[in-house]
Image (cartoon, rainbow, N blue to C red; front, side, top):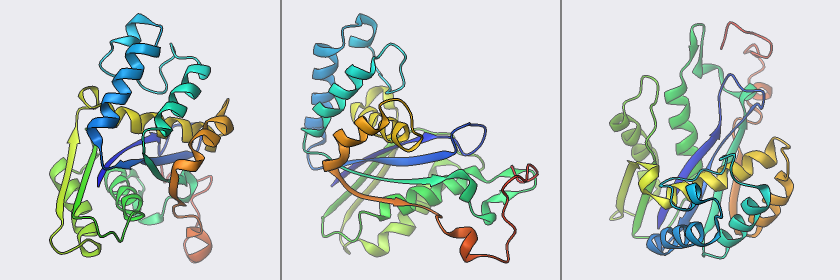
Length: 232
C-alpha cells in the first residue's frame, strides 16, 4: 500500500486547540495524482490556481462550494482515509518542558500512532510519504528511523518498507492529504461547513482515533498543565 499523510493545526499559539494528522492510502498513487491535476486544471476557475504547483485547502482564493465539490471528487478515486486528532491540552507531560515543547519528538509519536492505526497488514509493500517538515531537535533521518522502528514489528517479515519526506509542491498526493486534513480540521474545530466536509469524507474513513484522550485522568499524580503558561 501507498500512504500519504499531512497535518493541520498547531501544538501551541492557536485559538483552535486541535492537532490532526491524517491522509489516505491507495494502491494506485499515479491514478490519484493524475486525478488531482485533472480536476485542478478543469475545475479551478482562478487561472493562478489552475496551473499552480501547489494548491492548499486553506487557499483564500477557493470558495467553500468548490472545496466541497473537490472533496467529493476525491472520494470517488478509491482512497481510504485515516486520521488521528488530539486536543492540545492533553499533550502528555513527558513532551512538556519548562522552556517549551519537545515538538519534534511529539510529532514523531503522533505520526507513529496514526500510521499504526493501519496495522497489522498482510501487504507486501508499505510505502509512506509526507511533506518535508522541519522538526525541532529531530533531524529527518532520525524521524524516519523512529517511525520505522515503531512500525516494523507489526509488518510482514519481508515487507518492502519505504518512508520519504518529499516536496509537496511536486507531489499532488501530498496535496490531497492536505485537503483531507484541512477539511477534518474544519470539522473538529467547528469551522464553517466543517460538518458538510466531514459528511462528504465519512464513507471513505476507515479508522480514526483521538490520541491522549484520557491521559490526565489516567495519571492523576501528574499535575495538569491547563492554565499553566510555564509549560508552553
